[in-house]
Image (tube, rainbow, N blue to C red):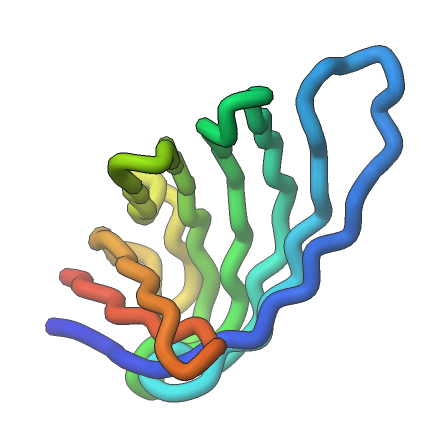
Length: 123
């Protein structure tokens, strides 16, 4: 099954002067097939050449195609001038409520300056 829609995101930088990487708090609002909130933390590093990596853990609470509950998404991204790789998947065993058996992956695409997603999942 899949759910499609959009999300709005706010990233709030956190001060970690002792660490050479950046940390941000994630606050998302999902609409479409996913309706709810995603909150989490992201660690990132950008090199002087522009290459970058990030990892994030996001807690989703809301509905997937009308079924309510929560689950955790793990993000892993690697970006360079030549390519981009982004993997986002549901952490096994993290679902609750009507989403207790959920598994799957999420893809993100930038369209007209906004974020669109496709969530391929099984329950």
